[in-house]
Image (cartoon, rainbow, N blue to C red):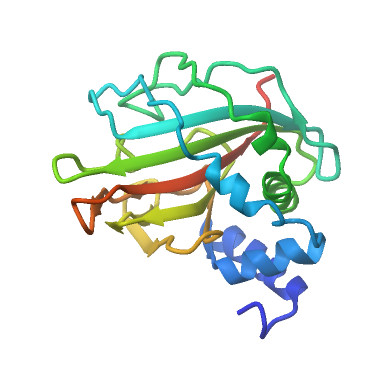
Length: 249
């Protein structure tokens, strides 16, 4: 894909698709091409960045009692399309029950994403990609940005549920979900839906840097549970979720 179209056209097609349908799937090859065109160093520390998903703490706020999700979290901000992206003081993550019927309604205090991971070329490149795309879709908007590292684990006794709350919205303007690594799993298919829960499309993020982009005002999304391919080996799904939202007045 990246080799057959100019990068500018790839970018414009992505914007048009999200504007028209409310969501888009972007392949790893296209993402790599775009990011590396912005900077030769964009993905130079990808290996270390991906390793930052290892040894994350368990999510202790799972109302279903699940012990299958690990995560870290960070809050950032940007004043505009071209403004500097700044790391904000660490703070709780909150979603209302309107958007998260399972775990919403409480302030959840997750461990922060390591500073080295936030400052990495890989993370900064992804954040700038989001800033550019989302600012073109919603111009002249200051941004409240949240980053979530998720590891969903599965074994022969436990399904790993990437979206335990089911088909949902996040209560933001835009969402990017980026595949970091799939290890010994099947399924984990992303499903897209309109606001009446009608299925619009489905696709599976399989390669590192495969991306789903969602206009959260227009679409709902979910991910099917993951299961181990070989139950005797570790099985997990690592993703980065980045959300962009208008700051609260």
